[in-house]
Length: 193
Length: 275
Image (cartoon, rainbow over all chains, first blue to last red; front, top):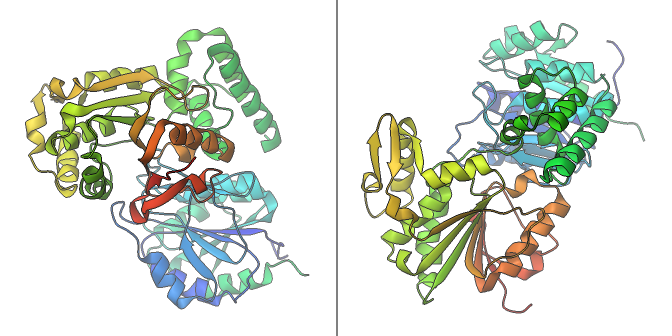
């Protein structure tokens, strides 16, 4: 995979170590960045998350928690709210669900990635970051099978290597990159106008 | 398998369920429905959704199983304690001004939220003047709601939720434990009617002062959300209250102008006077 696909959306999954990794990736996005970024971070279910506030303060793009049936707008980072799955609908709106946890997680990275792969197909970029879970592996495989771009954080550089490693195992075609390389990829992946 | 084919299959399967059994999931949010239909397909060991459709049409015993996949039943007593605390502290004072009250819990699943409100209203001295309607489309869930029996292992969570909701009594006053199960005090059901009602196809059935419909609208597409919120609007008395799930909003609804945000953080709305 040498060519840089022209993406329509980015999905990111992260667990243990998420805040540090996202604090590298999201601030790298310039104001007016044309793709939406949908993010699942595993968080305790009963807490109001301050993750969005923390990341917004470091970023030039808007970062906020997703609302049900909200239209997906470019240049916005949407975080799955704690205790809800985040999905993408065919009409490019977000939807939430309180279905059972998947691999003990709600939100689940797999659920987001699979629904996004279904909608965006080859125009999707999926990224599995640090984490101590195998969530995201099936989802990343769905992204790759849909023709999208599958990236993982290099396991040897991840605070918790299990998650990117599990994703690589299930999705051997995925590229393992450093956070800086992933950020650079995001900048290349934008459609030329 | 291309997803286009799968989309055709989903449309046909939902149509089959509707025409055969009159359960209408066609206006549901499809991303989640697709997931759950595929879980059902695996559960019933069908290679494709078309084969599952064949089973659905020719084997009526499969229906309860299909419904259990298509309706999400995840709840707790006093789930989201802050919501109940807000009802207690900010809505109840208004409700106390009414001589009689009706409360509608739409999409009540196995009854957890109905019983939570019944306990809260008893603590606040409102139970005797209140009639609670708990409605759902899933007959199995309604049976569980009628029974009011929950797994004992869920009780510690329920107890903690109740405490955090500002509970004025001990939750243990409201259940008896036996054989690994907690049976809720049957007198809590004295003012409760559980009934089959579909937000998709049924009409307004009562005039109520409070509608609580939490984590139900998220499964609907926008048209269906509009229909459901329209039913709530038409059911509510002037200045009546509508409580939604903590991540649900009327912001994108056709009926948004008929409601004011009463407690925005807890997604409690109040129906406006006119209209």
